[in-house]
Amino acid sequence: MVEIRRLATGGVELAARLDAMLDEAADALGVPFNPVEVVLEAREPDGTLLGGLSGYGQLGWLFVKLLALTPEARGRGVGMQLIRRAEDVAREHGWSGVYLDTFTFQAPAFYRKLGYREIGRLPAIDGHPQRIWFARKLAATGETKHAAKEIDQDE
Image 1: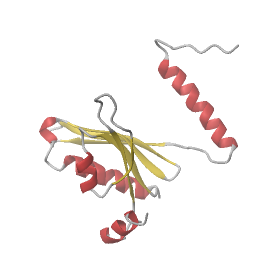
Image 2 (image 1 turned 90 degrees about the vertical axis):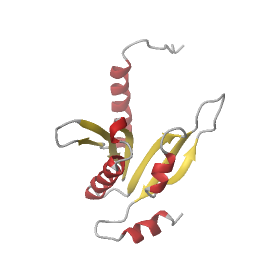
Image 3 (image 1 turned 180 degrees about the vertical axis):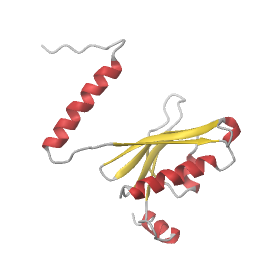
């Protein structure tokens, strides 16, 4: 019989092995993941870290895993600059768009303001906040912002 165990440690090593297993299976199907890491940081001219963004692109999309700002950076447009630069990176790689998730207590209004469309959410249960997924299709480099908005509204 198969034994299933919960690990107290070693999660990073197992996750790497699981990633390798998934990569091998995807390669065998002719759909390799080939993730490309995207990491951006925002700093003051004096070098003070204001925040950053990390994620990866694969299979035609950029996934923003983390976007975080210091309290001093909030409300200064730094988050918007990071998202817009990530979108530029996605265009440079020929990816179709960007997707990400946030919680109801975090930044859903921020992403909507930037043209992201809600594509799903987990229900609020037992007082926990909802998790919301957003996506934005991107126009090719050189197209107008108006064209990008039309693409977002296609569905």
